[in-house]
Length: 128
Image (cartoon, rainbow, N blue to C red; front, side):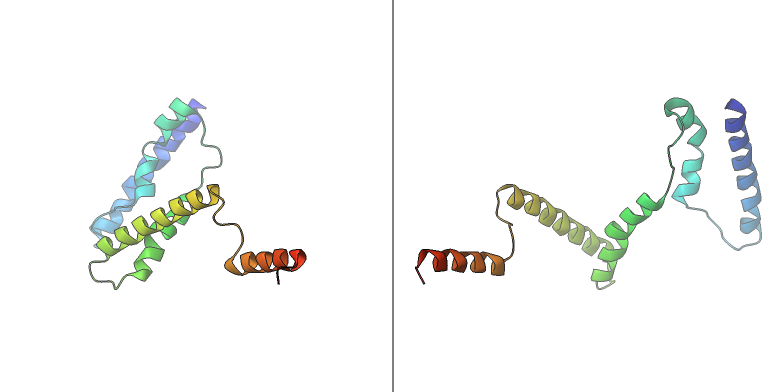
């Protein structure tokens, strides 16, 4: 296993070495990719906590879509960050309210189903 981790470090070092060609050719001046940065920590994290079971970035991507892409689409694109933060804050409060209301039994069914239930109760008791 230690050899595999050493191979991982060597492959990562080669990657960092060869990506410099993009800088020297002027294709890209900086690299700011969180996934690439996190790879630096893989060996140490594997040694500390064991193999990452089913390592996948799709969870991160799905959270990015929910927290960044969808709120951005709701903004007017001018100073979007502040608008996105407010949108996310409102969505968090709505989600918390939904949990609270459900725990109190306030969100059972729809308005229509409640009316139909009441009408059914009234018809069976002879009130209507």
